[in-house]
Image 1 (cartoon, rainbow, N blue to C red):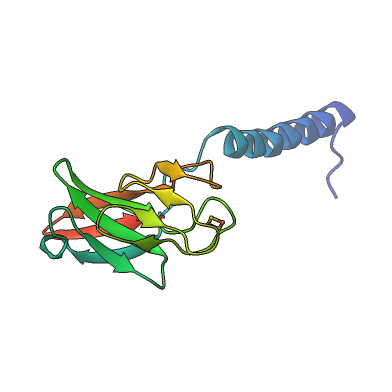
Image 2: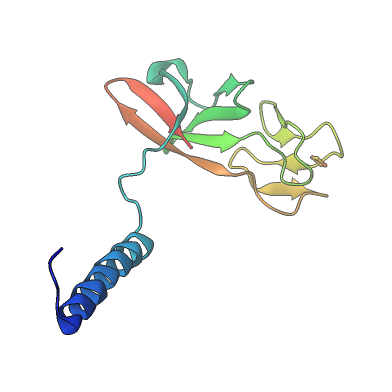
Length: 131
Ligand code: FES
């Protein structure tokens, strides 16, 4: 076995520790921009009528269209998590009566936070709701 001088061994050990801790530090400081976002639902964009909604009951979300375009709302009530139902002019929770406007803002409580707005990507005539 090769006899490595003490100072060289110490240098190599220190260098190895620095590289290992540097890798951990870089991974911690740099956000994962390449993290894949999950497609929660997808549809043909033309299937969402102006002023209307397309419901995805299993995914508990609605894809809506107004004059400004397509958007998606979570149908999970921000009070205690019941599934909100969509009517022509509002979204209402059957559990404790909270009502939300079609943008998801609270009209009446007990919920005190708006419904979660989900990211939407439209391309090639299809629309995807991302989580
Ligand atoms: S869970 Fe919706 S109002 Fe309570």
